[in-house]
Image (cartoon, rainbow, N blue to C red; front, side, top):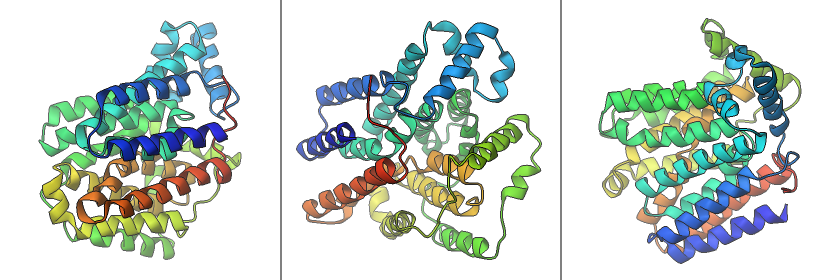
Length: 345
Protein backbone atom coordinates (compact mmCIF):
# COMPACT_ATOMS: atom_id res chain seq x y z
CA UNK A 1 0.00 0.00 0.00
CA UNK A 2 3.02 2.25 0.35
CA UNK A 3 2.90 3.25 -3.34
CA UNK A 4 -0.56 4.80 -2.96
CA UNK A 5 0.54 6.77 0.09
CA UNK A 6 3.73 8.00 -1.62
CA UNK A 7 1.77 9.22 -4.66
CA UNK A 8 -0.69 10.98 -2.37
CA UNK A 9 2.12 12.73 -0.47
CA UNK A 10 3.79 13.83 -3.70
CA UNK A 11 0.52 15.23 -5.03
CA UNK A 12 -0.09 17.08 -1.78
CA UNK A 13 3.40 18.62 -1.83
CA UNK A 14 2.80 19.65 -5.42
CA UNK A 15 -0.45 21.27 -4.31
CA UNK A 16 1.36 23.39 -1.75
CA UNK A 17 4.04 24.30 -4.29
CA UNK A 18 1.57 25.46 -6.93
CA UNK A 19 -1.29 26.65 -4.63
CA UNK A 20 -3.59 28.59 -7.00
CA UNK A 21 -1.05 28.95 -9.82
CA UNK A 22 -1.25 25.63 -11.67
CA UNK A 23 1.59 24.80 -14.01
CA UNK A 24 0.49 23.15 -17.28
CA UNK A 25 3.67 21.07 -17.44
CA UNK A 26 2.97 19.62 -13.98
CA UNK A 27 -0.66 19.08 -14.96
CA UNK A 28 0.20 17.16 -18.14
CA UNK A 29 2.84 15.04 -16.38
CA UNK A 30 0.47 14.29 -13.51
CA UNK A 31 -2.28 13.33 -15.91
CA UNK A 32 0.02 11.04 -17.91
CA UNK A 33 1.26 9.34 -14.75
CA UNK A 34 -2.25 8.75 -13.37
CA UNK A 35 -3.44 7.37 -16.72
CA UNK A 36 -0.58 4.88 -16.86
CA UNK A 37 -0.87 4.05 -13.16
CA UNK A 38 -4.55 3.14 -13.48
CA UNK A 39 -4.42 1.67 -16.98
CA UNK A 40 -1.42 -0.62 -16.42
CA UNK A 41 -2.43 -1.99 -13.03
CA UNK A 42 -2.30 -5.74 -12.62
CA UNK A 43 -5.37 -7.94 -12.62
CA UNK A 44 -5.21 -8.59 -8.87
CA UNK A 45 -5.06 -4.95 -7.77
CA UNK A 46 -8.82 -4.36 -7.87
CA UNK A 47 -11.83 -6.62 -7.43
CA UNK A 48 -13.66 -5.41 -10.57
CA UNK A 49 -10.87 -6.41 -12.97
CA UNK A 50 -11.99 -10.04 -13.25
CA UNK A 51 -15.53 -8.93 -14.08
CA UNK A 52 -14.26 -6.81 -16.97
CA UNK A 53 -12.18 -9.74 -18.21
CA UNK A 54 -15.34 -11.87 -18.32
CA UNK A 55 -17.28 -9.18 -20.17
CA UNK A 56 -14.40 -8.70 -22.60
CA UNK A 57 -14.16 -12.42 -23.39
CA UNK A 58 -17.92 -12.71 -23.88
CA UNK A 59 -17.87 -9.80 -26.31
CA UNK A 60 -14.83 -11.08 -28.21
CA UNK A 61 -15.62 -14.77 -28.35
CA UNK A 62 -19.39 -14.89 -28.43
CA UNK A 63 -20.44 -11.41 -29.48
CA UNK A 64 -23.13 -11.35 -26.82
CA UNK A 65 -24.88 -8.06 -27.45
CA UNK A 66 -27.47 -8.96 -24.81
CA UNK A 67 -24.80 -7.84 -22.35
CA UNK A 68 -26.00 -4.31 -23.04
CA UNK A 69 -28.41 -4.69 -20.12
CA UNK A 70 -25.44 -5.29 -17.81
CA UNK A 71 -22.59 -3.35 -19.37
CA UNK A 72 -22.89 -0.06 -21.20
CA UNK A 73 -22.39 0.40 -24.98
CA UNK A 74 -19.04 2.17 -24.53
CA UNK A 75 -17.44 -0.92 -23.00
CA UNK A 76 -18.88 -3.17 -25.70
CA UNK A 77 -17.70 -0.91 -28.55
CA UNK A 78 -14.23 -0.33 -27.09
CA UNK A 79 -13.82 -4.05 -26.40
CA UNK A 80 -14.72 -4.85 -30.01
CA UNK A 81 -12.13 -2.39 -31.27
CA UNK A 82 -9.21 -3.28 -29.00
CA UNK A 83 -7.22 -6.54 -28.83
CA UNK A 84 -6.71 -6.96 -25.06
CA UNK A 85 -8.32 -6.18 -21.74
CA UNK A 86 -5.27 -4.13 -20.76
CA UNK A 87 -5.76 -1.93 -23.83
CA UNK A 88 -9.37 -1.40 -22.76
CA UNK A 89 -8.24 -0.43 -19.26
CA UNK A 90 -5.74 2.09 -20.65
CA UNK A 91 -8.38 3.71 -22.87
CA UNK A 92 -10.85 4.02 -19.99
CA UNK A 93 -8.11 5.47 -17.77
CA UNK A 94 -7.19 7.91 -20.54
CA UNK A 95 -10.79 9.11 -20.84
CA UNK A 96 -11.47 9.28 -17.09
CA UNK A 97 -8.28 11.03 -15.98
CA UNK A 98 -7.97 13.48 -18.88
CA UNK A 99 -11.64 14.53 -18.68
CA UNK A 100 -11.54 15.04 -14.92
CA UNK A 101 -8.29 16.99 -15.01
CA UNK A 102 -9.66 19.17 -17.82
CA UNK A 103 -12.82 19.87 -15.79
CA UNK A 104 -10.78 20.65 -12.66
CA UNK A 105 -8.48 23.00 -14.55
CA UNK A 106 -11.52 24.76 -16.01
CA UNK A 107 -13.49 25.30 -12.81
CA UNK A 108 -11.00 26.02 -10.03
CA UNK A 109 -7.66 27.78 -9.55
CA UNK A 110 -6.74 25.29 -6.81
CA UNK A 111 -6.03 22.59 -9.38
CA UNK A 112 -3.61 20.35 -7.52
CA UNK A 113 -5.49 20.47 -4.24
CA UNK A 114 -8.49 19.17 -6.19
CA UNK A 115 -6.33 16.51 -7.86
CA UNK A 116 -5.02 15.44 -4.45
CA UNK A 117 -8.59 15.15 -3.16
CA UNK A 118 -9.49 13.23 -6.32
CA UNK A 119 -6.66 10.74 -5.83
CA UNK A 120 -7.35 10.16 -2.14
CA UNK A 121 -10.97 9.19 -2.76
CA UNK A 122 -12.62 8.90 -6.16
CA UNK A 123 -9.53 7.82 -8.11
CA UNK A 124 -8.91 4.80 -5.90
CA UNK A 125 -12.57 3.77 -6.07
CA UNK A 126 -13.37 4.62 -9.69
CA UNK A 127 -10.31 4.80 -11.95
CA UNK A 128 -8.81 1.79 -10.18
CA UNK A 129 -12.08 -0.16 -9.90
CA UNK A 130 -15.28 1.20 -11.40
CA UNK A 131 -13.80 2.27 -14.73
CA UNK A 132 -17.12 2.98 -16.47
CA UNK A 133 -18.34 5.14 -13.58
CA UNK A 134 -14.96 6.90 -13.58
CA UNK A 135 -15.49 8.16 -17.12
CA UNK A 136 -19.16 8.98 -16.54
CA UNK A 137 -18.50 11.17 -13.48
CA UNK A 138 -15.78 13.02 -15.37
CA UNK A 139 -18.16 13.71 -18.25
CA UNK A 140 -20.82 14.89 -15.81
CA UNK A 141 -18.36 17.43 -14.40
CA UNK A 142 -18.13 18.83 -17.93
CA UNK A 143 -21.88 19.44 -17.87
CA UNK A 144 -21.65 22.00 -15.04
CA UNK A 145 -20.99 25.01 -17.36
CA UNK A 146 -24.01 24.00 -19.49
CA UNK A 147 -26.18 23.95 -16.36
CA UNK A 148 -24.91 27.35 -15.34
CA UNK A 149 -25.45 28.89 -18.78
CA UNK A 150 -28.74 27.02 -19.34
CA UNK A 151 -27.63 25.38 -22.58
CA UNK A 152 -30.10 22.52 -22.68
CA UNK A 153 -28.94 20.92 -25.93
CA UNK A 154 -25.27 20.68 -24.96
CA UNK A 155 -26.27 19.47 -21.49
CA UNK A 156 -28.44 16.69 -22.94
CA UNK A 157 -25.66 15.62 -25.29
CA UNK A 158 -23.22 15.42 -22.38
CA UNK A 159 -25.67 13.38 -20.28
CA UNK A 160 -26.31 10.95 -23.15
CA UNK A 161 -22.55 10.49 -23.68
CA UNK A 162 -22.09 9.90 -19.94
CA UNK A 163 -24.85 7.28 -20.03
CA UNK A 164 -22.96 5.40 -22.74
CA UNK A 165 -20.33 4.84 -20.06
CA UNK A 166 -22.63 4.33 -17.08
CA UNK A 167 -26.42 4.24 -17.19
CA UNK A 168 -26.73 5.77 -13.72
CA UNK A 169 -25.54 9.11 -15.15
CA UNK A 170 -29.20 9.78 -15.99
CA UNK A 171 -29.82 10.74 -12.36
CA UNK A 172 -27.79 13.92 -12.99
CA UNK A 173 -30.37 15.21 -15.50
CA UNK A 174 -32.71 16.98 -12.99
CA UNK A 175 -29.80 19.15 -11.82
CA UNK A 176 -30.23 21.24 -14.99
CA UNK A 177 -33.60 22.53 -13.82
CA UNK A 178 -32.44 23.81 -10.44
CA UNK A 179 -31.95 27.52 -9.98
CA UNK A 180 -28.33 28.65 -10.10
CA UNK A 181 -28.95 32.12 -8.70
CA UNK A 182 -28.65 31.35 -4.97
CA UNK A 183 -28.80 28.68 -2.29
CA UNK A 184 -32.46 28.56 -1.28
CA UNK A 185 -33.57 27.77 2.27
CA UNK A 186 -34.72 24.36 1.04
CA UNK A 187 -31.09 23.20 0.77
CA UNK A 188 -30.50 23.95 4.45
CA UNK A 189 -33.48 21.75 5.38
CA UNK A 190 -33.28 18.82 2.97
CA UNK A 191 -30.52 16.87 4.76
CA UNK A 192 -32.21 17.00 8.20
CA UNK A 193 -35.48 16.03 6.46
CA UNK A 194 -33.74 13.02 4.87
CA UNK A 195 -32.50 11.89 8.29
CA UNK A 196 -35.99 12.30 9.73
CA UNK A 197 -37.51 10.16 6.97
CA UNK A 198 -34.83 7.54 7.59
CA UNK A 199 -35.64 7.47 11.30
CA UNK A 200 -39.34 7.07 10.46
CA UNK A 201 -38.52 4.11 8.23
CA UNK A 202 -39.79 5.79 5.08
CA UNK A 203 -37.66 4.44 2.24
CA UNK A 204 -37.49 5.46 -1.40
CA UNK A 205 -36.43 2.05 -2.66
CA UNK A 206 -40.08 1.10 -3.24
CA UNK A 207 -40.39 3.99 -5.69
CA UNK A 208 -37.49 2.67 -7.76
CA UNK A 209 -38.96 -0.83 -7.77
CA UNK A 210 -42.05 0.51 -9.52
CA UNK A 211 -40.07 2.20 -12.30
CA UNK A 212 -40.37 -0.42 -15.03
CA UNK A 213 -37.39 0.57 -17.15
CA UNK A 214 -35.20 -2.29 -18.29
CA UNK A 215 -31.80 -0.93 -17.30
CA UNK A 216 -33.14 0.45 -13.99
CA UNK A 217 -34.52 -2.96 -13.05
CA UNK A 218 -31.37 -4.78 -14.18
CA UNK A 219 -29.14 -2.39 -12.24
CA UNK A 220 -31.20 -2.81 -9.08
CA UNK A 221 -30.96 -6.58 -9.46
CA UNK A 222 -27.20 -6.34 -9.99
CA UNK A 223 -26.78 -4.06 -6.97
CA UNK A 224 -28.85 -6.42 -4.79
CA UNK A 225 -26.72 -9.34 -5.96
CA UNK A 226 -23.51 -7.50 -5.10
CA UNK A 227 -24.91 -6.66 -1.68
CA UNK A 228 -25.99 -10.27 -1.05
CA UNK A 229 -22.47 -11.41 -1.97
CA UNK A 230 -21.11 -9.21 0.82
CA UNK A 231 -19.29 -6.78 -1.48
CA UNK A 232 -20.91 -3.81 0.27
CA UNK A 233 -21.83 -3.49 3.92
CA UNK A 234 -24.75 -1.56 5.32
CA UNK A 235 -24.24 2.19 5.27
CA UNK A 236 -23.86 3.92 8.60
CA UNK A 237 -25.27 7.36 7.84
CA UNK A 238 -24.02 8.58 11.23
CA UNK A 239 -20.38 7.69 10.66
CA UNK A 240 -17.81 10.48 11.22
CA UNK A 241 -17.04 10.95 7.52
CA UNK A 242 -20.68 11.58 6.61
CA UNK A 243 -21.08 13.96 9.56
CA UNK A 244 -17.88 15.77 8.58
CA UNK A 245 -19.13 16.18 5.01
CA UNK A 246 -22.40 17.59 6.31
CA UNK A 247 -20.43 20.07 8.43
CA UNK A 248 -18.47 21.08 5.31
CA UNK A 249 -21.72 21.56 3.40
CA UNK A 250 -23.25 23.86 6.00
CA UNK A 251 -20.05 25.83 6.42
CA UNK A 252 -19.84 26.45 2.68
CA UNK A 253 -23.56 27.27 2.38
CA UNK A 254 -23.27 29.76 5.24
CA UNK A 255 -20.72 31.61 3.10
CA UNK A 256 -22.57 31.15 -0.18
CA UNK A 257 -22.84 34.84 -1.06
CA UNK A 258 -19.10 35.35 -0.79
CA UNK A 259 -18.23 32.10 -2.54
CA UNK A 260 -20.65 32.62 -5.44
CA UNK A 261 -18.83 35.88 -6.16
CA UNK A 262 -15.45 34.15 -6.04
CA UNK A 263 -16.40 31.22 -8.27
CA UNK A 264 -19.26 31.23 -10.79
CA UNK A 265 -19.73 27.47 -10.49
CA UNK A 266 -20.20 27.44 -6.73
CA UNK A 267 -24.03 27.40 -6.58
CA UNK A 268 -24.42 24.45 -8.95
CA UNK A 269 -21.56 22.55 -7.30
CA UNK A 270 -23.02 23.16 -3.85
CA UNK A 271 -26.48 21.91 -4.77
CA UNK A 272 -24.98 18.77 -6.27
CA UNK A 273 -23.05 18.16 -3.03
CA UNK A 274 -26.24 18.52 -0.95
CA UNK A 275 -28.03 16.04 -3.22
CA UNK A 276 -25.13 13.61 -2.79
CA UNK A 277 -25.60 13.37 0.98
CA UNK A 278 -29.39 13.39 0.69
CA UNK A 279 -29.32 10.41 -1.68
CA UNK A 280 -26.90 8.57 0.61
CA UNK A 281 -29.33 8.92 3.51
CA UNK A 282 -32.61 8.30 1.68
CA UNK A 283 -31.41 5.16 -0.10
CA UNK A 284 -29.12 3.82 2.62
CA UNK A 285 -31.11 0.56 2.71
CA UNK A 286 -29.73 -0.22 -0.77
CA UNK A 287 -26.02 0.46 -0.18
CA UNK A 288 -24.68 -0.23 -3.67
CA UNK A 289 -27.20 2.03 -5.40
CA UNK A 290 -26.90 4.68 -2.69
CA UNK A 291 -23.10 4.85 -2.89
CA UNK A 292 -22.98 4.85 -6.71
CA UNK A 293 -25.54 7.66 -7.09
CA UNK A 294 -24.07 9.60 -4.17
CA UNK A 295 -20.65 9.46 -5.86
CA UNK A 296 -22.13 10.84 -9.10
CA UNK A 297 -23.31 13.97 -7.32
CA UNK A 298 -20.50 13.95 -4.75
CA UNK A 299 -17.64 14.17 -7.26
CA UNK A 300 -17.99 17.96 -6.88
CA UNK A 301 -16.42 17.62 -3.42
CA UNK A 302 -12.96 17.73 -4.97
CA UNK A 303 -13.73 21.20 -6.31
CA UNK A 304 -15.60 22.59 -3.31
CA UNK A 305 -13.31 21.79 -0.38
CA UNK A 306 -10.44 24.02 -1.60
CA UNK A 307 -12.93 26.91 -1.67
CA UNK A 308 -12.20 27.22 2.06
CA UNK A 309 -9.16 29.20 0.92
CA UNK A 310 -11.60 31.94 -0.12
CA UNK A 311 -13.21 32.33 3.29
CA UNK A 312 -10.65 31.50 5.99
CA UNK A 313 -7.13 32.56 6.89
CA UNK A 314 -4.37 31.73 7.48
CA UNK A 315 -3.82 29.59 4.43
CA UNK A 316 -1.79 27.10 6.45
CA UNK A 317 -4.88 26.07 8.46
CA UNK A 318 -6.80 25.24 5.29
CA UNK A 319 -3.83 23.28 3.96
CA UNK A 320 -3.78 21.33 7.23
CA UNK A 321 -7.53 20.69 7.04
CA UNK A 322 -7.32 19.41 3.45
CA UNK A 323 -4.39 17.19 4.41
CA UNK A 324 -6.23 15.69 7.40
CA UNK A 325 -9.47 15.22 5.46
CA UNK A 326 -7.89 13.63 2.39
CA UNK A 327 -5.55 11.49 4.52
CA UNK A 328 -8.52 10.19 6.49
CA UNK A 329 -10.43 9.26 3.31
CA UNK A 330 -7.31 7.63 1.85
CA UNK A 331 -6.71 5.49 4.92
CA UNK A 332 -10.36 4.43 5.17
CA UNK A 333 -10.45 3.38 1.51
CA UNK A 334 -7.15 1.49 1.70
CA UNK A 335 -7.20 -0.07 5.14
CA UNK A 336 -10.87 -0.23 6.22
CA UNK A 337 -12.86 -0.60 3.00
CA UNK A 338 -9.88 -2.32 1.33
CA UNK A 339 -10.84 -1.22 -2.16
CA UNK A 340 -7.37 -2.05 -3.48
CA UNK A 341 -4.71 -4.68 -3.06
CA UNK A 342 -0.96 -3.89 -3.25
CA UNK A 343 -0.08 -2.41 -6.63
CA UNK A 344 1.36 -4.61 -9.37
CA UNK A 345 1.72 -4.31 -13.11
